[in-house]
Image (cartoon, rainbow, N blue to C red):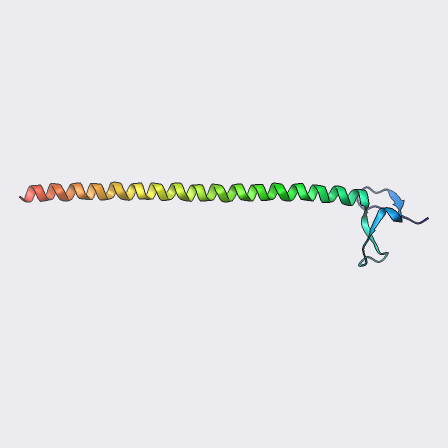
Length: 95
């Protein structure tokens, strides 16, 4: 019975508790099956959190752009109405 030490949990385990990896010198992965599954689950959760964070950031940026666009349009309308009032006053003054 051959044993190998898991890189993650540091326990010596039977080689049957390791997945195959042809790129490794001994043909086995560095992590035991239990640790590999645990790492995969953690990675999946981390990816989901990162995706949610990116999605929220994108939504926030779009909301800020929309607010800025609304504010700009409002300021333009106010400026136009102010200019229109000034023109009307000048027109009345010249009559």
